Length: 146
Image (cartoon, rainbow, N blue to C red; front, side, top):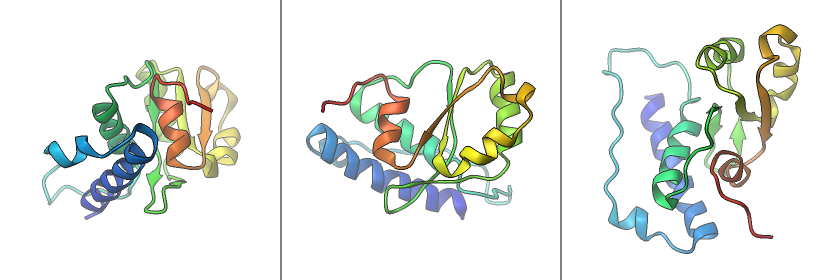
């Protein structure tokens, strides 16, 4: 249930931002996108994958790469904000084990990240975003025109 809702929200928001920032929605009108998901009987507890799904859609649509050694987590909301996630400690451990250098999080997770043991977060730089527009420019190798 969560994954389907996350996919739909990420798709809808990506389409709107692509139209606003990159001039049109041809990619989303002309391209069939499929997302492979775990079987229905496998439990999925939260919407934190929606930022990764959104990022994949934007990278495909724009042709820009996701920044190397970057990991992302958060909830893409219908109003285009990025919401907090749970299980941050475990996600930081996983990012460190995967040799990531940057973690992009909701600004709502900033206090929680800073409360983590310093040793746990010492090799990670956190980037905090409030909305999906910021997220696009934090995670993709593209500079924003002022």
